[in-house]
Structure formats: structure tokens, C-alpha cells
Image (cartoon, rainbow, N blue to C red):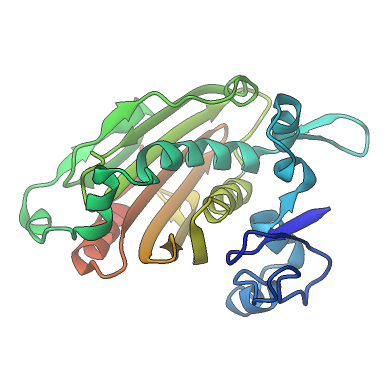
Length: 280
């Protein structure tokens, strides 16, 4: 069974069909319903919708070790274990947000919510950075710092490495970079990774009115997906984001930028960073 979480009351509605529009518990309209989503994404199927917004039984069970494990792996028709690559990358990305961005109640997080990006950043010299030494290069007005990402063992052992970088938490514009390389024979599949990342994002506590669109693009002739959207934080603060996912063979690069909805300088900085990205 797959479930659809109500952003109003948190109830997990069994996802039974394409025309399911209202929560069975509070009777309010489900903000993420297939009918409205399909109008914005006519090329996507109901299965795509379930992959992004749906939560499986394993995901909603109490978070015991065995249940967490089944979130990332499942058996195929032949009984062989299949790695859910989208869930792996989505979970790894979300570890950043849980640790560094969604710090509920912290003074640092409040500065992100209430400050705006200074226009000075647009005119000051930008630096070119190559985080992780994996070929990723881009320009940024803010310093990036590496941090250690704590991942469950069943996730960590599937990667050769996971490297994460972020700006200082006090900045009104947040940049996060995560670089992952899977162990063979796994390969980084682009659409699964993008779906997993945005799916984890919208299912976080205190996130509602989550909307986005994705566009196929290429970075240095390497396939990529750019996701642009917004969400409401704790029903009060609207946050915009840019989320770029790039994959090549066993490596995936993820660059995420957050800024307030009423921050035009933040939007300009975010777009400039995205446009400067290249892979060597």
C-alpha cells in the first residue's frame, strides 16, 4: 500500500486512485493530488506521482532498523534484492536539511528566515570552487565548508564516498552540495535520484504547499535535471529553492540553493550560481 500525507493534519491517506483529492481524516483538499499535479506535468504518469509523493508501508512503520533497511531495498519478481537508488540519494540529501537548514527554534535558522540576501553579493568578486575534486566547478559569493554526513550503515556501505558542503548557517541564502559515488555494480540513475530528492524534501515535518517543476537540461553535455519550486515552512514562511541533480555513471552531484520568496537578490544569486556550474 502507498500513502499520501495530508499537509493539513498529517494523516496518511491510502493512495487508491488518480482522482483522490480530499483527506479522509480532515476533509481538506490534498495539496499534492494527482489531478492538479498532472496539469503542471502532463508528460508524467500516475506511477511517477506515486514515486515522488507516495509513502510506502515500510516508510510509515516505526523506524526500527529492519524497517529502515526495507526503505532502501526491495525484492524483484525473481527474489533478488534491488537497491532503491532514488531513496538512497533522497535520504542522503535530506540529512543535510535536517542537520543544517531545518534547525527548528534556533537563532541561526531565524536569521535565514527573516534576513534577505545583500545586493553587495552581486557586485563583489565571486570565487570559483571545486568541492570534492570530482570535476564539479562553479562560482559562488559565499564560502563553502565541508562537513561529515552521518548516514545509516545500510546506506553508507553502498557508496564509495559521500561528500557534503554548505554555507554558514547564518546566511540568508543557503547553498548545499552533496557528491556521491556508488559502489559497483550500482549506477546513478538521473530521474530516480531527482524524484528521490524532491520526494524526501516535501515529506519533511512542517513543510506544506510544496510545489515544483523540473526541466531536463545538460551540464557540460552531461544529463541533468533542474528542479525549481517553493514550500511553506511551519505555515508561515515561504521558501524558494533551486535543486540541480547531475549523474554520470556511478557519480551523482546535487546542488541545492534556498532563499526566501520575497528575496529578489537571492533569486538572482541562485540563478547565477546554477548557470556557472560545469563538470570537467
